[in-house]
Length: 178
Image 1 (cartoon, rainbow, N blue to C red):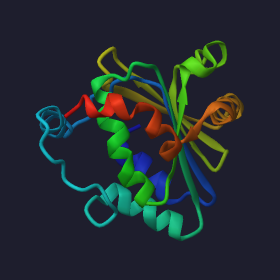
Image 2: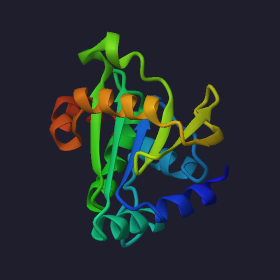
Image 3: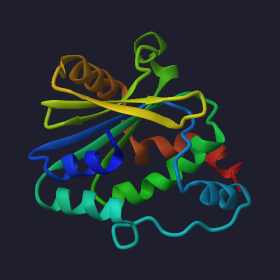
């Protein structure tokens, strides 16, 4: 499955979209320059539905009454990439997405079980995502066998806090990025 196919599926969602992220670093096409600017302390371009087609899609879906949410299960100390991503999530919030963080240190025995990324659409279709060691996406595999993904979502949500409530606890780590 390719990203354009996933986007078509996300546009057809009727009730809800959920994303679980579990890696400390992703290598996404087009982010190299942004990461370089971030590490150099340069201002990043604004991320909002007005400037980003992905966020426009999310905002339009949320405005049509669908719920979008994600939990990023992460480790501390934060990796360079996670510092970059936590700041970038501000655009997701502007689009109406419910962004939450689950710190593995809070419940290492439970949250340690969450090691696979996926999308969950309307609780009827899951798309498991496989990555290599450098966080490059290798494959996306859809399945209608969603029970394990619903359980993982519910587990992540049990220990997750809203992004805005989490950020004050890592302010000192975020400042190190500049």
